[in-house]
Length: 139
Image 1: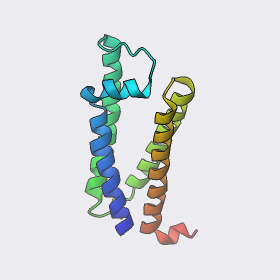
Image 2: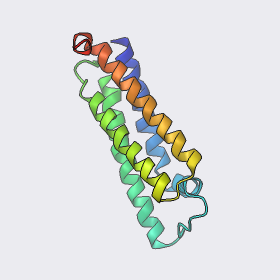
Image 3: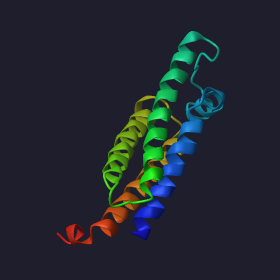
């Protein structure tokens, strides 16, 4: 239970604070500039505002998952469904990062860093699931 509780708190903070704050308009200009170096993002133009609006929706969704995870830390077994949600979210985001590296000029170091982060969250989520349901983990 302790492994799952710590996972819920960590993923909750990461999603609700870091991911959400990183998608707010004041942060996205510098973040996206580092993520896509050499790409004209048209900062200050309406198309960049559209990109920022899309990022904030992603941040709100991740923030919502994070808040549910933080709430679920009180009773991880009851809120265990958050764990597969995190796994699927990380897999989808990892696929997006692969796409971004290959076809959208994302900086390799940024893409590789985020892929490692996705892998860590997935591995930790699996460990949390196994800690909550050890009999299912054995098969």
